[in-house]
Length: 468
Image (cartoon, rainbow, N blue to C red; front, side, top):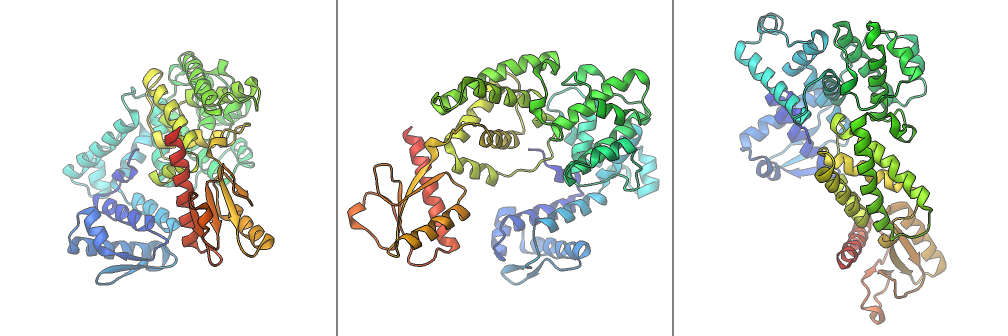
C-alpha cells in the first residue's frame, strides 16, 4: 500500500504516524507511553517533543487539546477520534512542500523551477531537490513499472489531492451540466467528481490530452459528453476525454460496473476479462459445492460482473482508499472459506493474467461483492449456538434478539443440542454436554462477554476450515 504520508514534511510525517497509532488504540483512553517508545524506537525526550507539538496542532485545528501527557501515560480526550485525525493530516498537507510541487505540476505540466520556489517559499536548493525526488519516488510507486502517460498522471494527481481532501481551488466555477450531474450523488462522489473536473480543466488548458491507447474502455456517454464540451478541449480530443471521464466514473462507483458490457473494454482488457471470468467461475463453483440453489446463468452473470470489475483495474488506478489489516482480519474471521477463496482468485490472476497490487483493497471489494451475490455461499460458515437459560422462553428470546443486534456472523440460534451444535450458551455449566464448548453468562452480557463469544465463534470457523 502506498504511503501518502511520505508527501508531508518530515516532522509532520512523524507526528501523524504517531497520532495514527494513538487512534488505532481507541476507545482505550489511557495509553502507556512505554508502548509508543518501544513500537517507534523513540527516546523519552523525542516522544514527549512529538506529543507536545502534536497536541498544539490538534488545538490549532479543533480548538481543544487532544490529550494530557503524564509521567507514564497519555490520557486521551473524549473528543479525540478519526475525524480529528483526518483534519490534521489535511492540515499538514496544506503547508507541505510537496503540495506546492504537485500544484505547480498540475497547472503547468512541469515542476516549478528552483528560483521560483526560492522566491515564493524561501526554499534553498537542497530542500527543493529533496522534495522533488520524494514526489518522483512516490510517482514511481504508483506507476508500478507502467509507462507514464496523461491518463496515469491524472489518476496520480487525483489520488494525492483526494487523500488529503484538498479542493485545489475552493472558488472554482462549475458549468451547469456538471452541477446537474452532481444533484443525485452522495457527498463523497460529488467531491471526487468536482476534483477530477478541475484536474481535467487544468491539464487540458495546457493542451495535455489523454489518448485512446492509454484508456481501458471504448464507451462514450452523452452525459459525460455534455460536461467535457464545457472544457477548452480541441475537437479531435473530445471523444478520448469523454471516454476518460466515463472510465473514471466506473472507477469511483458513480456508474455501476454491471452496466458496462465486455465489448466496450479495450482489446487487451477483453482478453483479461475472459481469463479472469474463467478463474472466478471455477473458484465460486468450488466454494458453493456446485449446489443447485441458483441457476448456472446467475452464477455466470455474477462471475462476469466481477471479471469486468477486475479487468477495469481500479485497484491499479485508485490507490488512495485506506483499508487496514484489521479490516482484513475481520473479513477472514467472518467468513474464512470465502476469504480463502477470494485470496486464491487474486493469487491466480496475479500469476496467470495480470500483476495485482492494492491487495487489501481488492480483497475487501471482492468480499463485499460476494456478500451481495444472489446465492448462499456461507453455509459452511454458519455456527450453531444453543441457548439454554433457566429463565425459559422469554429470557432465551431476549438473548437471541441481542445476538442479532451485536453479532454480524452467520449464526443459527437453536433451543436444543444436536450433532451440529458448535457452542452452548447457558447460565449454568452442564456436565452432560462437556464435549461441547460452553459459555456461561450469569447476568446480562457485557462487552467483554460479547468479545469472548466472538472469539469462540472465530475459533469454531478456523477449526472447521482446517479440517476441510
